[in-house]
Length: 209
Length: 208
Image 1 (cartoon, one colour):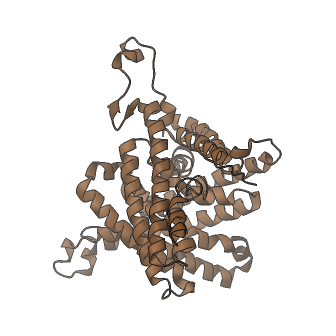
Image 2 (cartoon, each protein chain N blue to C red):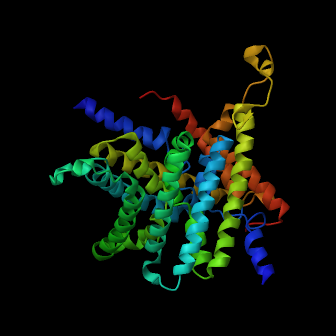
Image 3 (cartoon, rainbow over the protein chains, first blue to last red):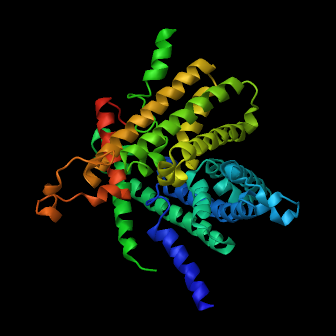
């Protein structure tokens, strides 16, 4: 039992710190740069990413394992179907699942939890086109995780993204009062700061799990 | 008429560059720029997808209901990305392995969605074609500049051909060591940040 727990814990640590989806793989940069101007909004976006990532990665795992991998349709017991290979449909299926989940989550939240909807609402549509979400699903496929592992991976890469964006918005808030060269204002200085942040995260790569 | 055509094509090259000015498509600009050849292939794949998606979406623009336009756009783009991915696997398998998930991520690359939404939905196909080409080439240019800097400083080579003599390196009794940081994530962020600084100083653009 302890070993199993340790396995998931180290998977989570790896996804949050060592292989941070934003600072090591550059995924989700667009929304990271656009949203990180205020702390409150970045907390909102971070929460929405954790939420949607935690749902879509396992859901896409199910789609991948039972529908689109080569021979995955064996459970239907139709003769000859184990030769069917739908893996070229991977991208379309993944993005359709993500877009549909986002829509569904938006409607459910609106109905059952208006307060959560009000705080996450405007960020949910943005998430359908956030590369961090599609990227996590694609990484899940490439690294061959099982269902439990992909759930843990989905949530913790969301946590990694949320941490990075909240940190960045706090730094940018302070930046308002500093004297930055004209051409470097805005995007340029944010890029360089992200570089420094990612350099700090590099120090986690010494951790052996 | 021809001036509009020209500006649609040439604006995104330098003054309204998708990466340094419009802040679109940063993810892949950072991730695939360790080697020049990989960056070139990625740029070609993006130009292909962006131009075709702009043409298709602007041809369909009057038939797409605005409530489901995001999903329609995503489906068009995703199908084109599948096409690009299959082509890469067929003809450039090694590079397609190095690009790993980033070809698939062209789907959510903000340039493609952004141009579809901002330009192709309002303009006829022939302008959308030029807009797609212009933005694709503008993106490719930045990708290649970043990757040249990173490959020269990080691996001491261009297109996998060493440019420094072997005797210059410390292992062979010289004085030079490659800067390993350039191959890692922070190198990419800092090179692109400095490039943005240069572009904005040259075009005189200040963000408030």
